[in-house]
Amino acid sequence: MYKRITLDIILFLSLFIVPWWVSYAMAIVGIFFFADFYEIIVLGFIIDIVYGAPNTLFFGIQFANTLSAVLLFAAVTFIKNRMRFYQS
Image (tube, rainbow, N blue to C red):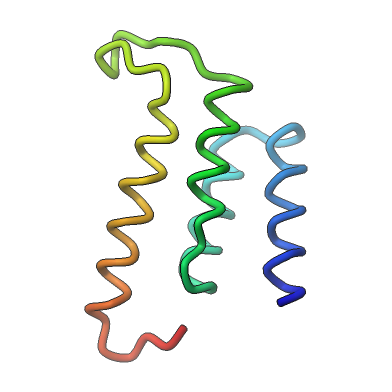
């Protein structure tokens, strides 16, 4: 339990100290270590609120990081359920 809380605090602090992709990399590690790591969706939302702007690359979607976090969470959850030797 303390590992998850520690990772959450580190992720939140990393949003303001390191580039966004470093925070996402730590969140991906968290997805594999913890079951139902919903914090990645909150992380994507905070990145969008603090740093996000509408971008023509993503068809004007302002919350592209949140959308990518939801898709990443769903994909990794699907993969974890299909893995034979994965134990959460």
